[in-house]
Length: 288
Length: 122
Image (cartoon, rainbow over all chains, first blue to last red; front, side, top):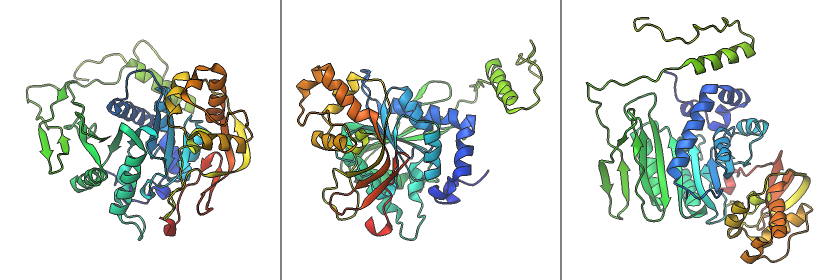
């Protein structure tokens, strides 16, 4: 298992031109980022009135998540520390405005102007001290403080994160609470190591119910664990159900449509691909 | 960078009490047409600092916005069109943003402002 990018280099160096291009041209990554963004938008719980909102995309990178925001009709401002990633976003002609900046230095936005903030796979980078002058706590404090200020009343922030360990996740949560946020963690697919995704859902103001997390069989996990500290803020962590042994986890598999799409992609790249026949993507016998 | 974003940005330099609005140094402005959404304009109007928007639009060469504006003007299509044009269709491609208190320059290249602070400004 390759090591985490966060341990290899600071983000503005790890995401250089080559890495930025690789990241954005991988169809798998594009698909995943799009799904994560859709889910984050869902958790943002914006009013369902069809009115386009002004959103913030923190760690927008090459604009993969931003494109999903635009597709949903919203205006957005994206912030990223890697000039290479932003250049790829320019090439993709994203509709949102881009800012080259460091979220650990504070967001530099006027109070109460943002209707919602999302961040896909970015906030965990704040926990690393990449320079000797960095103190992760101070950076997290500057980030959450400035974020709290620039969000409108009742607006939410949803961060999809990859914390390295429990301590990191606790640190992020603690600094968010200290800035005045309330909220909790939503974990989708908690049992699958591959599909497991964590979302930090933060609200400005009194706590609202945290959304139900998703599980493999399509149902939702109930929020079992509720911690309440002195200031009456709740941190909900969704329960880990153990899958009953009798329950078969049905694999969705990749159908004919996906196979045809992939073959077309390979042909475009100039690879030799067997011709499409009636046998392409046909269901094989179970023991195959 | 559109004037919508400029209207939200403030200088983050250490010790600055009021970093808004940022001054604009224009080198290259581009106009890009986008579809008008009345819903969005009506929703965002209350968050816009009108004077800053007027000054910014004049700086990039658009002088059609009225000096004062209130919510009742949003009923007029004419006003919506001008508001939309200034807010979303004018792009500052090259130039700089200036902190009103310290004069610190934030360069703008290819439409992206560089808001990275140096170590001593944090």
